[in-house]
Length: 132
View 1 (cartoon, rainbow, N blue to C red):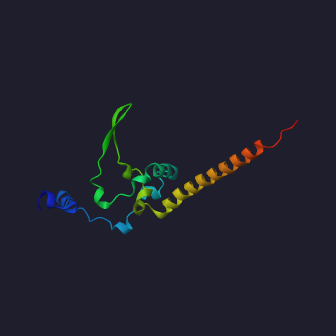
View 2: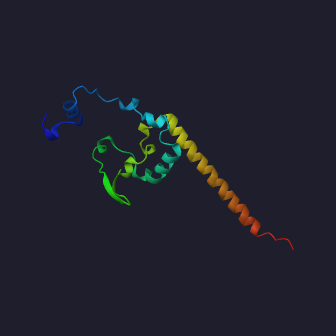
View 3: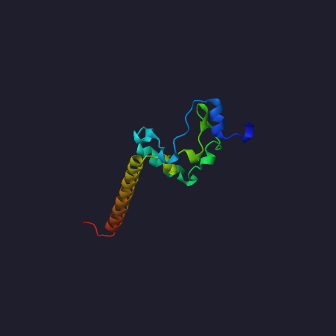
């Protein structure tokens, strides 16, 4: 195995020979999501903000750059937008967690519809004659 010709798995095998091979992609999910360590409401917001970046291709995972952003406390490393939402990468998300995030989305959609109806009713009431 020579430098660039070695695959990532070969490099891991050389660095840690007792490491087991990865879990097959079809059986892998992030357990911390199933345990709701990331609240579904937060994930919904992150998805809305970052889903336009699209899902991460397996070949991109190690190639996506981190960059430093200036904050009040100096610089902090920031994940690329493709890594800021789990829902954009559904193959990583347990079905139970996906359902909870979709329930949050449904709630927001219902509230939005109720606000639209209330605005229409209020606009209709403005045209009515008032008390004399």
